[in-house]
Length: 260
Image (tube, rainbow, N blue to C red; front, top):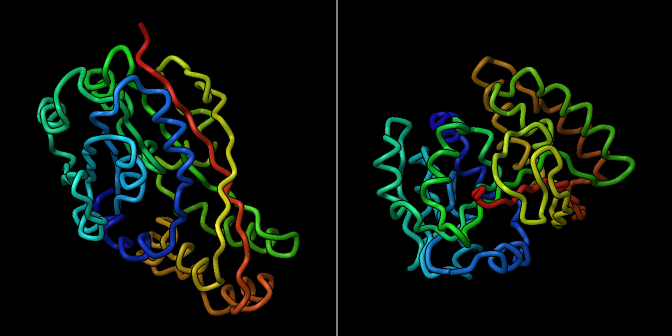
């Protein structure tokens, strides 16, 4: 998994949408304290930067050293490389110890984890009571009636190249195990649906497509899913390379606390 995201780290930084600030305010309002947060699968630190506006310190971890090289520095964010070989005890200690964390966030990341192991760690480190975990993902997006069918044709070509872990993402987290008590923002089997708008040029949109793990996996296998022909079809449907459009990313969120 780390190797996969190492290759697309710079593209990921340039292309992915920024999560709305009000999401972090919403989550912060649900925690009793605001001392420590853990952003797991932080990537370039995008979510960590939103979380740190509400918490005294954020521990931001990722298995990809290359992603962390592109992480955006902040005096109250501590970035750590956490290889797959790290033990549960080492990770719990690194984060802050048991019953120490007010908020755990995973933006576009939880589906990559060994869920039973990860949830065990979350249960140990979350403050009880008063701590919460929030996970969210986006997969589909709406641009325009002219563009969306062409985009779907492209997206269908990527399906054979997604890793098995991404199945939960494909299901919009509706089949994702989430063994935590609901706090009113989605629950296991029924995530909260949110819209995330972003203004983007066609080149910016194309960079996002190139950051897809499936696109990079296909390249490794000698298949160019974004050939010149495909790019031209997407550009024409978009309305031209100079046009800036508003994309609506369809986002799915689950928020919970450790069960009593």
